[in-house]
Image 1 (cartoon, rainbow, N blue to C red):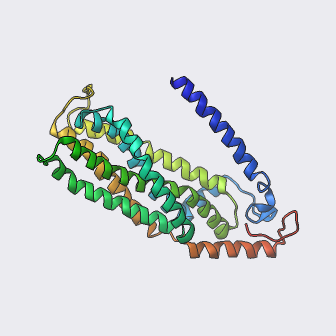
Image 2: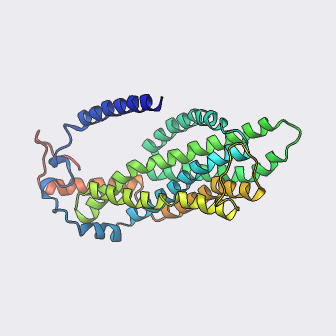
Image 3: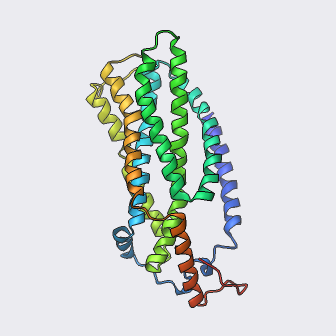
Length: 302
């Protein structure tokens, strides 16, 4: 089954990759890159300058990597949440399907907000919404677990609905980061006249993955502190209160810390929609001064 599914997704990915290449084919030319052929040559040591002096890249890395660290850790902890707290490993698959609906709705709304209000504003908004939902769940979880007037499934379903809404907010905030990398690359051209989106993206991706790779360590540390570091945990088995607290801390508290770090970082990230207009206008003026033209003879912005 998995072999067939893998082959199907490989085929789909290949088709979409070809379509993406066809879509950017006409624009993937030097005259459209930053200042065109007049841009300074990029050297490896320029990477250090970007990391040291591009504050927006630094803040975006902090915001994205802390959220991703929490999200990856949560995915690992959810296995124990369903199997050893709700005692239903099969329910995790159903929950994953549930999350599709709010994720699609939030994505549709979020894309429209990002187009009209700017990427930073949308990222901050959905990060705030995700943080608020986490606070609600932290407060509501003890109340739901103490509810004896209704059957357990009602409390579980209500909690999972709250979790699905929170996940949809947090995932959208994480997805908004991707086009923000392009803004940072344009800002680097504005700052240093160097057009280096590949290097900016590589630096971002490297640091982001380096930090998010610590997620497994955090989950393992939580299990060790709860007394299950060297224990083979059986599925659908109720464990101790300390174990439950450790898993809930990973699922609720860690993402909240990540969101707080993101909101703090965004206070020092100044690429608002107005700032990006200034960046694009400045790049456009430099291209005009350097007589950078398209093959059709029209002066264009980078």
